[in-house]
Image (tube, rainbow, N blue to C red; front, side, top):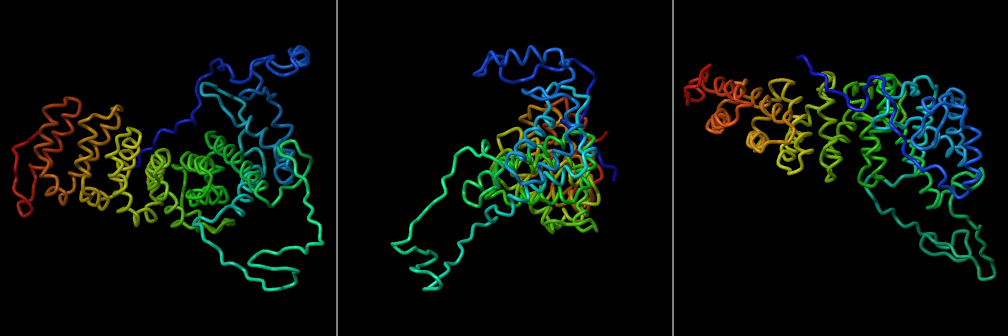
Length: 442
């Protein structure tokens, strides 16, 4: 069946216009305004505004080309100040203003090993992150084993021994070339780095030049889906960045990559990936379940993903129909968009959707309300039109004949669609299934 390509937001390029003003701290707002004024006066003629990058800090366009190797090595070093410098630089280079048209954006494919280096930062955090399901570990009992005074899981020094602790400074961004500690403070630092790396990867996924390289990188997809799996205990910003990255790559995503011959880092499977997406769909957070519905709608556009998604079809339909009853218009739009793509897959999908309780009622509710976006109402109408094309669905849909007739005469925008629905519903009904209950015709 011919699939309809969804419009990709955030990745399209526009015509050349004057870049919008950058956000940032006004000139002269620092503590040393005299020094800042002198530096600005000296650098005023070095570069034109059109050749500068960054949201608040102006970075020359040649910076990425001259420092790509150093950026990758800094990410791989594990040193705090090097890692901080690389993450800050990449955040600026990957940032794009809402109305900005940047011609010299840095494609990820032109920087060897950069994507794997960023993913390694996230993997380092995932290695020490809390488990997906918090489990209380058993207490280790050491009764007098090589210790002066022992207890349950604790060791105490003798009274004569001196307890010394290494003083630590707060604010690790200002420390020297130290490695990360393994205490709570070190875990917090690792998490900050992982969130920053995920934000950079998310920004890269909006660039059209990076879509193919990222969509075919197994390590990237495994790490992003692993972040979705741990949404119960994981940092919300990290999960959101991973979810948006996968959404941007959704139309290009082939779940068979998890069983391919490409090297695997996490042993992700197609089933685990779909279960991670289902976890987002069932989340109580509005942003997550809306994005989860949109992600499933994009995954089904690839026919090769159907064998992995169809076993979860009953749960998907049930949750999407629940979202149709939400008062939030974004949730309704995401659910209708996913159901629209699912209804075009095959006959079995249309039969299961029609048999889902409240599905037709809530689709009609979206149209009658109506939804603030006319395109959503049009898609809901097309879903009903697809459902009525299956003869097995006609006994179920005949109960809504009066509702369809009311929409035919009350709403001129969708009168043609409901006329076709009534015609298909009553003019060619199998006498063994149900008698014709209307006189609708073309």
